[in-house]
Amino acid sequence: MNVYLIGMCISFVLYIVVGFIISRRVKNTNDFYVAGRRAPVLLIVGSMIASYASTGMFMGDAGEYYNGLFSPMTILATMQVVGYIYGAVFFGRYLRRSQVVTIPEFFGNRFQSEAVRELATITAIITMTVYLLSVMQGIGTLMRVVTGLDYNLCIVLALIAFLVISVASGASGVLITDTIMFAVFTVALIVGAVVITNKAGGWFNIVEKLVHFEGKTGLLTWGGNTNYLYPNGGTNIIWGLVYGVVWMSVCMVGPWQSSRYLMAKNEHTVVRSSLFSAFGIFLLQLLVGMSAVAVNLLNPNLESASHVLIWASMNVLPTIIGVLMLTGVLAAGVSSATTFLSLIGSSVANDIFRGKGNSISIGRIAMILVSGIVLLLAIFNPPQIFWIMYFGGSIVASSWMPVAVASILSKRVTKTGAFCGMLMGFVGCFALKLYTSLSGTTLLVYFDPTIVGIVLNVCALVIGSALTKVTTEESEARKKLFITPEEEKKPTEVKKTMNYLKMTIVLGVIVAWS
Amino acid sequence: MEVLISILLGVWIAVSGVVCYRYMKNDKERENNE
Image (tube, rainbow over all chains, first blue to last red; front, side, top):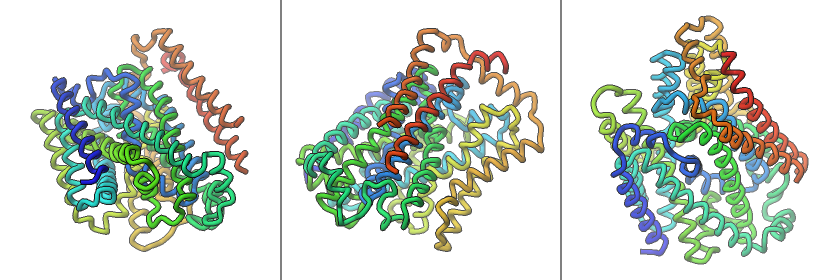
């Protein structure tokens, strides 16, 4: 048994023990699904970042930085993290205020429509199941590469860990284990980044060396490496902007992100958490990027770019820090998986089978069944599912984002408009991605399926709403959202939250100035 | 070009901060209007 496997097994046992301890505090459905709605900023930030940061960031994104997309990825990250702030101010606060258990329930109540709620439930479950599959495959690959164990055994071990946490303790346990895992991978990444950049010559020397690096050109230039993704810098930048819009939308309304707000102790916690999460994700992305691009100076010819941080952990870092780093990457994957699984259970119990039996038991059974399905898909790994995995964020961005924003900002949007928008966004994105995958067609960077889905969503939303009238019930449901609860009006708390927002403006000025 | 990108990203963050700040500042007025 190698040292990395020992570290990973210890971390699994630790998370499971914590999950069991917290499960004793779960007294009712509110505790199980929304952590009693009393979570402070630290737990919301920890869970939001841990749910976002998965093997995708530590492997997929790291590979893009390593291959030379530092500048486009930085644009993407900057656009994306601002999505947290927009999401909290224009959607998350109202979500928290509505006192719902799931986001589909919010849509159903806002538009007074079962059809809208059902469609939102279907899209949420598909998205999170697909994303869970993607994360599970990432965890399996990581563990196989590091430990040499059989891939199937690796995913079974990981599944046991995140299934036990989610089933035993629900949202309460997921919030706390997510925060522990967030601490683990943040510390690991900070230490790892410092050591990697030092071994590569120190950050300022690295910049100098990478600018003149002959192996791969343009690693740190504005347009990135033009021998990798697109043949010119302008298109690489547009790629960064397009995916910036996609991931900004995910950070605004993605169920595994905005659902954390349902657990916040008040609306000030929602807004403040979004600011810390935005800053935290940006910092992590930057550290991943700096570490990955620096590895070019140590080994520019890695067979698989997505294994760059794994390679560095095993070949550059001292063993103990390497173990910490790889345990951290694993924690990032497991924390995302626990969030997806608990949200799937919540949606099945509260949106599909609501009022039919014991809600917690239904949620637990749903989690076990979905885990089984995902495990089978991950083991048999049919090649056809590869294109489906791209849909993790895309479906949410194209089917939810415009409707979510319009549900708050627009008086004129109707249930018909919301339903048509959500449906067209989903179908447009799905169909185009299916067509391009099956036909092998490469679309222009501007016509990414997610962008097409968003445009179709907006068109259907506008047309559907123009052809129908807002009912009194819909209008009343929206008005209720704008009534600020008395406990949210404390002047000291309001002032504090507004000061946090002012800091965002200052941060923007500093970035522009530097 | 790198400098221009840096400025634009800073402006993007700052403008977003202003938009959100102004929206939240008008919460009370919005509540009355709605």
